[in-house]
Amino acid sequence: MALKAVKTKVSLADKAYRELKHKILDNELHSGQQMTEAEVSVLLNMSRTPTREAMLQLASEGLIELKPRHGMRVKPISIDDMQEIYEVLTGLESTAAALCATKGLTSEQLSLMHDAVNTMNETLDRDDLTEWARADEQFHRYLVEFADNNRLKHLVSNFIEQSHRFRMLTLKMRPKPTNSNKDHLDVISAIENRDSEKARLIHHQHREKSGRMLISLIKNVGLNHI
Image 1 (cartoon, helix red, strand yellow):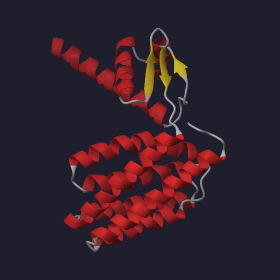
Image 2: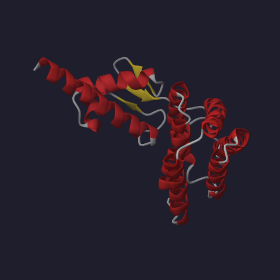
Image 3: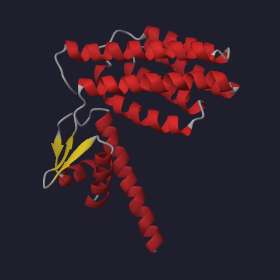
């Protein structure tokens, strides 16, 4: 019985963590928003214990800060933060693209990457930018996963999550991302041809261009952070 109680506690804490994190990353809880532990508990429809554990974990990841007797505050992301995040992502994902080309991918892995780009094209045709962003993020996750480097995968996953709030906020501000779809197809082609340097270069230029554009959008509307 004791073991079952521990497992239930862990699963509830994990559920609370995932739900609260999702609300923060998708900007349902906005930058700077403050909530007491009781309010978060009601929001998640959870008891105070798993809610508190979820808040502690998110605080350790830097998404929120805990305020004694005042619950939590969603931490803003500054322009400088985003500049650093995109610089890191550009370097690490470009390395992943080169690794994929060097080691070679299976037909199933290449098919999954093509499927992600096809979904990007389909969602863009119907102007569903939210679903386009999900497919785009999936492509980037495949790229890193298939590079088969666990340390690289762990680092990139963390930075992708940090950039997610920023990308979703600017989704409706940006030009229609047709070129992004083409860039991804060019990366796949370089990987299929086992051309590691071309795969690295194409993805590096793609990430650099995207980062500059998104940061410029935030600056143009007069924001220093989100």
